[in-house]
Amino acid sequence: MTGQPDETGGGAERRRFPRTGVVWSGTFEVDGRAFECLALNLSANGAYIHMFEMPEHGGDGLSGSLVLPRLGALEADVVWRRHNAMGLQFREDPAVVARLLKEALPGSRAATTAAAGYSRPEADPGV
Image 1: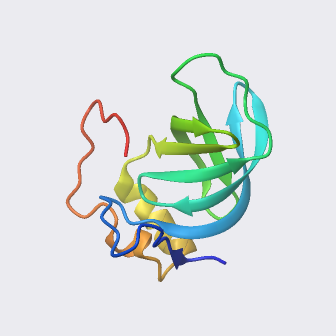
Image 2: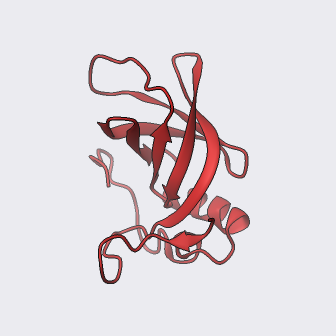
Image 3: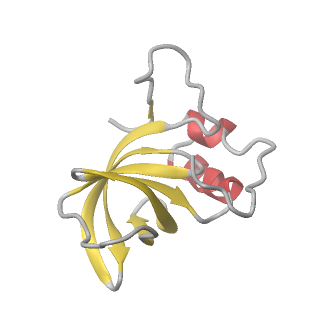
């Protein structure tokens, strides 16, 4: 299952950055250690990942690199953590990530409509 829209909210997606459902294996690298994960959806602004082992981190502000063979390494901040899942916000400009998604998933909504007219504020708290 790759390139499928994430329609889990009922009707049309209302997010600033459309998501595309994927099941891609990769790693989340933090503090010199690589943790195996599955990316379950991607947008130009972030990712939802399932972790097989969660990084031990006592406070807020966890960040690292999401490494996916089809996209490469993307620096990201963890914006939420639950059980064995994390929501990431990429540090890269969404327009750059949208171009990577377009190459990896040419027909996905995340690649074709992401980042249109968006400029990231200096202190974006996440989305």
